[in-house]
Amino acid sequence: MSTQQVPGGALEVPPLTPGARRILEVASQLFYRHGIHAVGVDTIAAESGLTKRTLYDRFGSKEQLVATYLRARHQDWWRRMELRLAQQPDRPALALFDSYAQDAQPSDRGCAFINAAAELPPEHPGRQVIQAHKRAVIDRLTELIGPDGGSGAGAAAAAEEVFLLLEGALVHRGIDGDDHLLERAREAAARRIARR
Amino acid sequence: MSTQQVPGGALEVPPLTPGARRILEVASQLFYRHGIHAVGVDTIAAESGLTKRTLYDRFGSKEQLVATYLRARHQDWWRRMELRLAQQPDRPALALFDSYAQDAQPSDRGCAFINAAAELPPEHPGRQVIQAHKRAVIDRLTELIGPDGGSGAGAAAAAEEVFLLLEGALVHRGIDGDDHLLERAREAAARRIARR
DNA sequence: CCTCGACTTCACAGACCAGTGTAGTGTGTC
DNA sequence: GACACACTACACTGGTCTGTGAAGTCGAGG
Image (cartoon, rainbow over all chains, first blue to last red; front, side, top):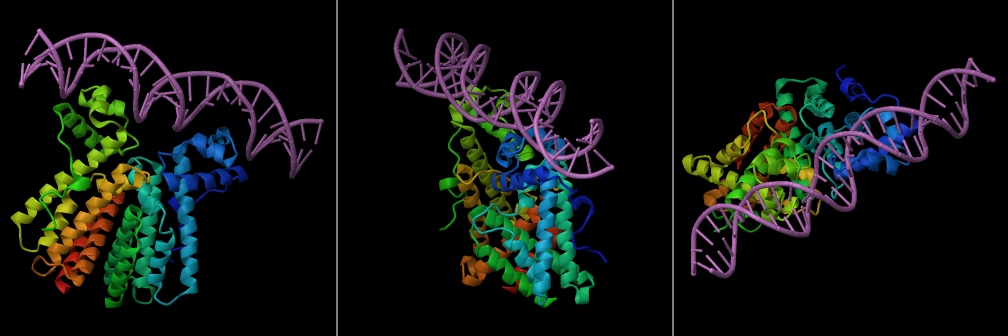
């Protein structure tokens, strides 16, 4: 099978000590809300009630903390998506669409992966995580659209189009905080899937 | 008429002294390539061969310099787009699509406005510029798709879908540097426009 | 009892951040 | 000659950034 419950490799989060978990939780919220460059390690340590020393003992560098943040975010999201797919197995591609879209509330900062990609330099280890995440989403979408779980060429094309609509809508919501284009994207995606 | 050659208001760049122009040029390159947070005013001043004092005398703050950078970027792009539209007046919506897509080379950092949106806090003056830019693009696209320059409801919907495909493809190119999804988006957009 | 691991405390390095104050130069124009 | 204006030179403030070094606390498990 091509997808585990949570795809591994670049997207795996190693076991964490309780302190490290706490730091990661706080860092995740701050990174997402304010952006990665805008949040310093001092702030993360202070907000999590742990010391900067612990942060560096556990994660090695801010870079690695950021990469771990993205991996954890992927895992959380993937788990939620599979749950939703199991609960509403009809029109699964649209269920993924909804899951992706509702990963974030209307008033928030859009897609964490897209935002991170905009901030991180080309060599940053987090970039591989972002690429792996998006690849995993497209692949899953292709499976869901393809006839009986297979993946013909038509399914791949449809999946990519649906993915683009989704990404565009997510970005735009991050810009103007409006859900209107998200609804438009969903309609277009439904039409596209029905056509295939 | 609903669009001037270069839409004004939030998108207007005030007249600049020679030194200010030089600073803006250098700042534009650095902001685009490395991101806004990652580039300091000292660097901008040094690279442009002018002093930090001049930068602050001309622009007032880094915030305002950033906003001006985005305005200037919009104006450049808009001018290029209108030029392309004038040169290939058939299938104008796709011409805009191509112009938007080729605003950036394959190996670069994607859409400057999307990247900036991911970095800037909600209160930043640059955000208004970004919103105005995207609004201007959607409006122009609607005009181009609509029957004889008009803007029926169907044209608006088609324009939004084309816009979403475009944004999605642009974002994804910024993530994996691949043009493949851009071509896919163009095909889908062409199909969508033909249908209307 | 001893060791290990998680975590603390705190000082510190060295660079970089946005932004200002003051004084002065050169050029063009009324 | 007076004035405006673009720009320079440069020191300086107060703060933040990532990252480290060294010594020490505490509890669990052998």
